[in-house]
Amino acid sequence: MMRPKSTMELVPGDDETYYLNMGPQHPSTHGVLRLRLHLEGERILGAEPVIGYGHRAHEKMAENRDYLQFLPNTSRIDYLSGMIYNLGYCQAIEKAMQIEVPERAEYIRVICAELNRLTSHLLWLGTYLLDLGGFTPFLYAFDDREKLLDILDSVTGSRLTYSYGRFGGVSMDVDDTFLRAAADYCTYFRKRIDEYHALVTHNIIFRHRTKGVGVMGPQLALDYGVSGPCLRAAGVARDLRKDEPYGIYDRFAFDIVTAEGGDCFARHMVRMGEMEQSLNIIEQAVGGIPDGPVLAAKVPKRIRPPAGEHYFAVESARGHFGMYLRSDGTDVPVRLKLRTPSFVHVATMPVVLPGTMLADTVAILGSIDIVIPEIDR
Amino acid sequence: MSELSLPNIAESTDVDYSERGMQHQHTAAAADMPAVAAAFRTAGYSLEHITCLDLRQVEGIGAFRLDYQFNPVEGPVDRHVVQAVVAEGQAATSIAGIFAAADWYEREVFDMHGVDVSGHPDLKRILMPDGYTGFPLRKDFVDEDPERHQLSGVVLEPGAVPGDEPAAEEGADEV
Image (cartoon, rainbow over all chains, first blue to last red; front, top):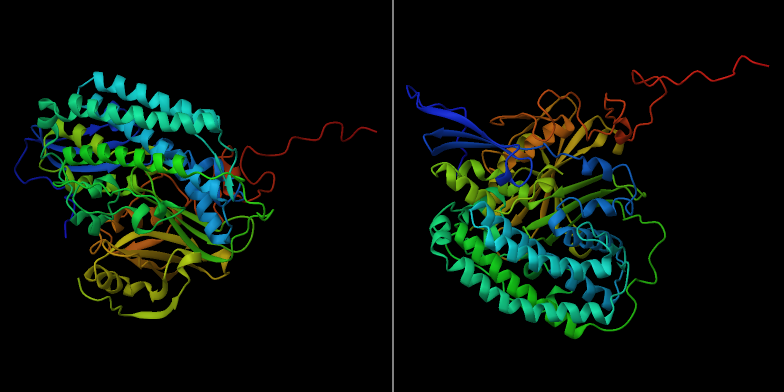
């Protein structure tokens, strides 16, 4: 198996090497991440990520408040897929307590989660191109993301930290305006994807910066548990929405997008393809949404999952987000472990970065789409 | 990929996946974890996470429990959770030599619960700063910083934290 090279190992008799701290204050680390790089000229010999600058003790907070009080925290762990995390937490508790969710609420959840996935991928696309030095795509991507945020804002009242889910459904019903806006956006965005391909994917500079750079092979899934677009870019068709369907994802026809090579370009192609699949899911959900209540009638007043261990995982925009809950049958969890995808992905940097050039660090770090608050929790 | 056969397992129970989200729970001795992890790896399972539980208040025994969760990389979900109890003051055994992901998870267990891990390549704090004292996810954790102590969940007696003495009651010696 692959072992990370320790950054402390200096080559004997070689005084040409040096250490460089990238971050914790650096625009390309997308937050307060510090990379301790061991360099020889511009070639990377070793890398050690130093994390924890944004630690907010979410797991400790979960042990000190009841289940409902922890709900707002969930959208703040990965603030870019806050809706997916928030709904995932609700689904975890519902599964543990066997609460039935009304049909309409399930459809609304799928629409909102996929809209949220689109916002996350669009933000990634914009900032990634910004990392690589292309300013224009950033403006297009953020413009399109803004339209999505308006749609989500109209139903949740919030742009990022949604807290829209409730145990047994969602907090508010959607109206026809929302459904029409979501469907119209799908029509609009399909054409935009072609434009993004023309602007970004077919750009020769972009290809040179990303092809063959930062290869994360399928082996990393076994060694590290890499998931999400990073894994699918290595050709492994693994998606929790298909493999371990939660909610009503098993009712929709969509493909698991994969690519070959596992390099930065492959990860770009996977995310572009995933946006298209999200559109497919949204269109099917908008077409099939039934009338009815959006909150289960019989939700226990006191949320007390049965004693013991429970695990629930959802496919966030970054990969496998899991919640490991130990309950003792009271109002407060004994332990809530949050298994976040970015934590794993940044842990692979000591094996992915060595051998690449310093300038590629920015391209690689951007391409794995890390969100620091979910690493530090 | 070979069939999964687990050595050194003390006890196994099957649990209801539709309720619990996992299929199997096992108990193993902490020292046997490398052998157990190697068996999972041979069968094509990856490590999903390592969690620690402070048993001292939960079950009233002076120990911590490490939960290791495994799931196949390919094919249908078959989730195993192996529980290894580590007595207070004793060390868990590292599986970082088998699953590279365990490196950070074990550091997190050390950082948050103060469980020593023997055989770990570089055991140090991961989320808290290097010079920090105390282990935040222990149930009896008290942050020495009076402004943050409400996070711990432990109700402090007034005066237990320096600088937190109750103000003298006004007008107490009147009348």
